[in-house]
Image 1 (tube, rainbow, N blue to C red):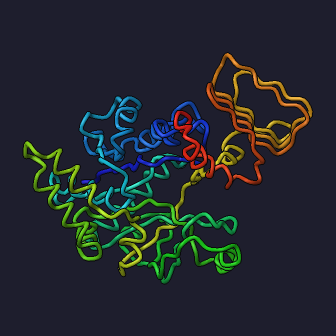
Image 2 (image 1 turned 60 degrees about the vertical axis):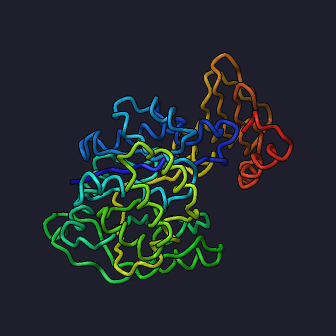
Image 3 (image 1 turned 120 degrees about the vertical axis):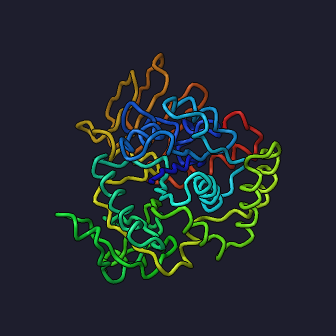
Length: 367
């Protein structure tokens, strides 16, 4: 059967001051009335049942995640004792799923992307799952056709088209190719070259594979990690399962699924995503997700007054406050109850430095 694994342990430092350690990006509302993690679960629709949905998050966020997703059973929240990047997260989820359903297919996805239409996304996952069912050792990822030479995404280089029965049975199947190589985030010149060839996709971070297949790959390419995961699995039904989880998971070396596994696997295919996708990587994403006023501003505040303001992103989280801007251009203005950010929207990378500077000064109440 198909199972969904939603990764929800990230920190979202580019969205300070609204994103905090206890309330990161995935728990925020960005493009609608639902938070990003709620929208991710909503998007699954009838693809999987709640009892076949796992949300992997950290111990610090587990309660908040559960509160936002009351429709899921209590044991749907898979708690990682500490952050260890995506490979250990996925391995832990696969270990648990495989225990209950040895033949399970996993659809793995981040919790902080905007994707639509939802029905197109679900059909794409079903297609990838059909590919995996026909070729059990196959690992499937989704690639996003690039629209500009992005330096902030990993890239997937495609090879020959994949011929499969799943595609032959559909009137309009998505394009699917063998993967030649996965590439790290490139410099600007290299990103432009990738774009010009037409042979590269942005790495969406969405995968479909059998739980047994990804565990076998982890065993092969990350044997130490696999050993720790096995100890966790062996203790799952014992009275000491919590202690074993804390000890063994904390001992795993942090590494991403891309670096730890995917770059070493030969039999990977990429499906060209037929859905719209936005990774919502920074405050400027709101310019794509929300309507602009006649002066090119994005206004997401209950009370706002602007004079001679253009190209500015304004967001206020307190309905009792009014935000006023006068004579400004191309700014990011984020107002929360205890912190306000005013930044040049063309220098968003500097926002990532703020949390480190706050920690250096001992102002942890703002983290």
